[in-house]
Length: 118
Length: 242
Image 1 (cartoon, each protein chain N blue to C red):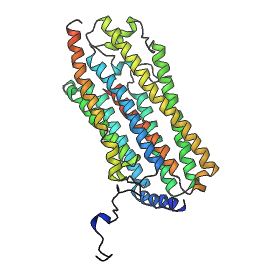
Image 2 (cartoon, rainbow over the protein chains, first blue to last red; image 1 turned 180 degrees about the vertical axis):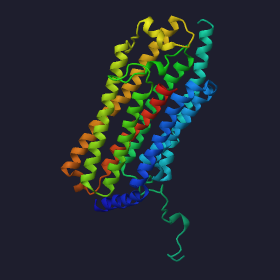
Image 3 (tube, each protein chain N blue to C red; image 1 turned 135 degrees about the horizontal axis):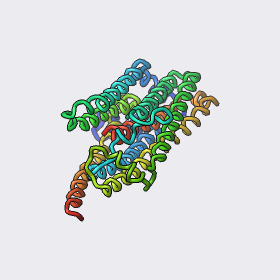
Image 4 (cartoon, each protein chain N blue to C red; image 1 turned 180 degrees about the horizontal axis):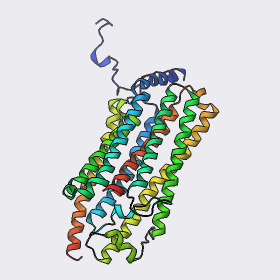
């Protein structure tokens, strides 16, 4: 039991080095900055530049994935875990990508059904 | 054969997966929190992906800039994204105070942990309050589960889209159900997160983790809290921006 608690403690001191207060605030400002860029696109670019409309949604999604990366990697500390844990969490995301592909395909089919009046 | 030369088969392996230790090198509860969050991520993605599929195949969709353009109690029209921007800021901010609590826990500083945990709880309550106002605003317009505003009000949300009143009503129903279900499910997570954070703060005040010698529990609830923030990032993008 005592051995276990010392192990936990050693692990802690390593993590302490990996995520300092300065780094926490850096990540916060990155997240805030990305959100501000999203607002800039939504409130300024979209109303003023209709030409950019086709690119807006892909840009939102990429920026969102960036934010997700920073939250998971730094706030949730996954970047500093062992490689096997990282893979155990990241690889199952493939199932989500699979569902996206399947349902995107399916929704195309729904559009076809509707145009046929079914 | 001398005993010094051990055959390869008898050698004790010391790789991470050879047994006798945790290959993930994390404490049990933290690992299980990760796997719970993975399953929760599946639930949320199922909801968001079905939202995406329904919206993609719809003939028209209520425009986010027209549905969400008020700041409850202050501005009635013409302020798209302002209120939800505030909500996003509150949640990101409370995520930061949570990491700061974890960081203070690593230094075994009980006072700081309590301070940051209380800040996180306040942030959570502020977010829930904002969400209640947002729901109340939409409800006052006529949106609720399987309930939509009358056609006169409804067509204002479809300005610039060519769709029949029937198509507008159909997609407005889908929008209302999906919006209240998904933000409701997220709000429920925020609520449970706040409750868990309060319990953990009381434990910190009672000195439970000081006696235990580690503030690892703060990290575990922190993971849950960040996950709630992570989900909001996606909800925000797909309901308010896209």
